[in-house]
Structure formats: structure tokens, C-alpha cells
Length: 450
Image (cartoon, rainbow, N blue to C red; front, top):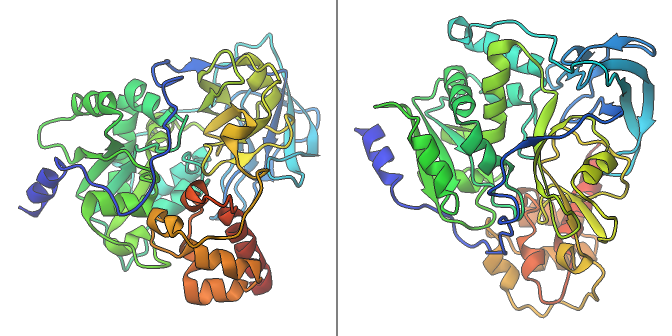
């Protein structure tokens, strides 16, 4: 009866308090099918593409590798392995540029263009006969991390503490960031893989049901998935209102279930595990074949590219190569990896596409940021309070940041609950870069704690 009532409630479009409605800007790519990106002559595979310890290299200079072969092992449980995105030869292990600035170790592979580039590694795997523990180990072997952008190792996220019971698996298909349409296309084109990945995740976490949360601007995806569901299927679709940042896992839990994750807490504390649709869709393909993550779908869009679309890009592809294949003219003034609200600017075209890159946006300066506009004093208009989805006081936090009262921000004003969605900065009439202030405060507090 409880399950029936919960499923019936999904007919109502849920949402959360506050939030904003920026232009979605998705029409450039949401109708375009996924297409494969060519293989670059050189691949750069960073040993750290995830939250946790970097992987440890298994290869050496001059070694021949084939596509799909493990080239780096996980360094402990909070780590994932890396796999060769192409068949080629290892040119070395070097320090290479990263999107965030500091250089990091990466395995450099020269591509054999005469090779077929078929995935040579893999074997059949009967996941239905495996235990939850064995499936968690298998997920780690795939090298899978959250493809929504956070990069948290998927096997760690699915391993719930023994003293907590999970009743619901939520699959995040909101994709509320402007411009990005990778998840939308995955739900339309990889529906079977998505449902298989969900069934694997259900077995691991022991939940009685799974709900795919999709915003109401993607009703074609809703219909495509519902058409594949069986009678009395534990998987259902919950339609939620289109609003930013609906895709935040804690806010999606509230929208779908009416549950609130406690401050500083985790979804499993309210009986929920959340995963991104792209993550589970990839697991649905990789797990049955014992293969590793070597490519991902990336939205390349914006006024600075002539061939926008959703591209299946080998991990390690140089950003410059990916943009050239999408028709980048080099005349737009700002590059963003991810979405315009939470993504990071790319200071160099010589960085590689990694597991966490969901989008490459080429935007005009006025479209991408207000950082270079003049910053005015706070006028206490309260727009940031009305926008903040977790009901913080960004104005007060901003004033404390200006005084470098970083510990007060965390101890008294819940700074660490901020997930840096950018809603406050977006609505601020004074152009105050609040999110940047909060990132600095968190960074300083982490350094002091260390």
C-alpha cells in the first residue's frame, strides 16, 4: 500500500522551494543524436579524474596498449582504475595541464590509426548471479565515477553503511544546467542500457523501488522510458518541474519523496541512494561485458561552434581536437567545461576531456560570466535569499567573506551546506561573485583543518 501511494504521488510534479529559471538554451543540441568523435593522434589520460586517490600507472614508455586495456590500477578503495581509450603506444607518463591550473600526471598514448580501435578487453559477466559485494568490486574495476560532474567513485557511493536501510533508488535525469543535453539523449537512445544499469543498482543497494526524476521539459524521454517498463515494474518515472538547480540530489529527493536530508548529511540517512542517468546507463553496458570506462557523451555547444552536438568522446581527447571537430573558430572569448552555472572555465586548449566533463561550451563573454563587470556594494535586496535553494543567507555570507571570517561562515552560517549552484550570483544586481567567495572560504577552511 505504501509503495502504491508513493507511485501515485509521482503523478504530481514535484519541486523544491526557491531556485531560479535561467534560459535553458538546449534547443541547439537536444534534437541531435549522439555521434562518435574521431580519435585524436595523441591521448592524455590523467591518473586523477575523480574524487579520491589518483590511480597508479601499470604501463611504461614504449609499451603497446590496446583499446580497453587497464593502464592504471586503483590505489585503494577510494580510487578507480584507468583504461586505454585507444590502441596505440605509450609515449610516457608526464605532467600535463589540467582545467583547474596545476599540472598533474597523465599517461600519454600515441594512437595507431591503422588499428580497428575495437575494444579488445572484456568477457561475459552474469551479474544476476553475483552478490552485492561482488558487483561493487566489479563497478570499481570499470573505473566508473559519477558522470554528472562530481566525479565521486560510483562503487563507493553504492556501498551503504550497514546501519542504514535503503528503500528508494533515485536516478537523476533532470539535467537542469543550461545548454547540456547529454543525459536527455542518453535517456532517448540508451534506454535499455539505462534500465539494466538501474536493475544492477537496485540489487546492490537492496531498495524496493527506483524512481527516475525527469524535468517536464523532457517529456519525450519520459515517454521513451515508460514504454520500456514492465507491468508492476519496481522502476517508475517521476516528472518534476523545470527549475534550476532541480538536479541537485538533495533537492531532487525533496521534490520526489518529500524527504529532507539533514544539514551536513547524506542521502542514505533518509533511505535513498542517488545516481545520474549517464552513470547507470554506462554501467548497464560495461558490467555485463567486464569492460572499463573509456569514453563518454559530451555536449559541445554555444555560439562559438558551427557543428554543435552530443559527441561520444574518448577520454583523454585533447580539448583543442574536440573543439576543432565541432567547428570551433577560435573567436568566442570564453570556454567552460560543464554547464554555465557550475562548470569551470578552461584556461588552456591543451587539457584533456576527462570522465567528469559533461559539456564543452564556447560562449561570448557577456553570456558566460559577469566576473569582469564592475562589482557594486550589496544593497540588501534579498534576491539571493529568495533564490538560494537550501535557504542560506548568501548576503550575510558574502559580507563575512569580505572580512575573511571564514570559520564563522562555516560554524554559524552553514557554509558547507552550499553546493555552489550559482543561483545567488546569477540574481545579484550588484554583480557580487558570491560563489567565488564561498569557494575561497571553503578552501581556506580545509587548509586550516589540514
